[in-house]
Length: 317
Image (cartoon, rainbow, N blue to C red; front, side, top):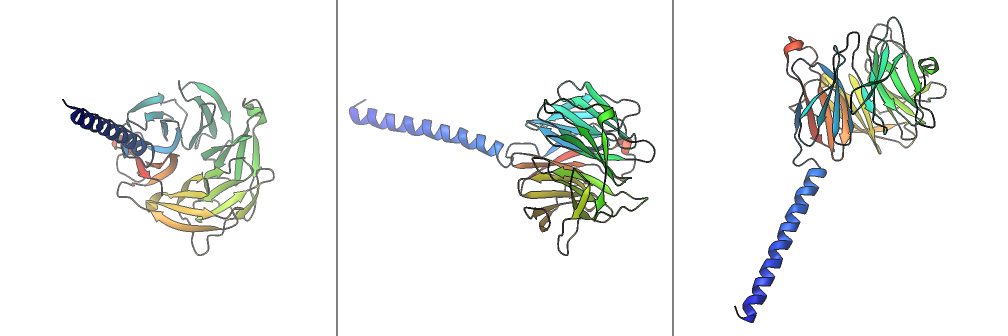
């Protein structure tokens, strides 16, 4: 090969290597950005009857309402298995995972809350929050506490988190009565989903029966309605606060409300309502990078113990 041939060969080889590298970079960014190669649905066990969802790293967790089971899946592959087996007397409704790998679970009509090891599924703590007529529905974890909603009572329950990260005891659990602009309606589902600003100084709740959103002062329980103008979020269920965006799942309406709240959460602009043919009574939402994951609870379906269930992934707006 003459000199000009060797130069041409080197240029061609270098171009091929650069092209291959750019191709690999492109695949990586597609997968970690808007979803790309991520599965758009994650199948749950037959008859699972799910409600809550939480994400930590690449792990997605979903609770089973009647059995108390928790399913753990890899969002990269969509494959998973039961992490927490069925336990008599336990329910699994809302879920959250903290930075220490603890999985907090709301226990519905049991009046209980559970904390599991997100790697092994082992019990860490079991709390009795309420007795009698109660429905412990959802949970959010702040630096100071895990807060649980009660859809049957105008209160929140606070499980303290100490400065060293350890959890408080059952004796240290406190009940915060909701006051201010929140108006409790007996006999129906009231407070449902709950979120919080990063430092835990403000909580946000949705009232399913009225479609209203409220801020809660976690020190005294004072509530203020987040004014959405002429809009509301009826059938509001799970809440997610991501930066300057507030997501509210509207379960039986099969849609996800996208709201931009004011810095003080006094008002909010409802920007859009996301619908998707794959939604089938979604209840809660969790985020990972450029994706949102919603659980299809399929409330009202015939033979729920034999039905198929899934988690749906959509691109984050």
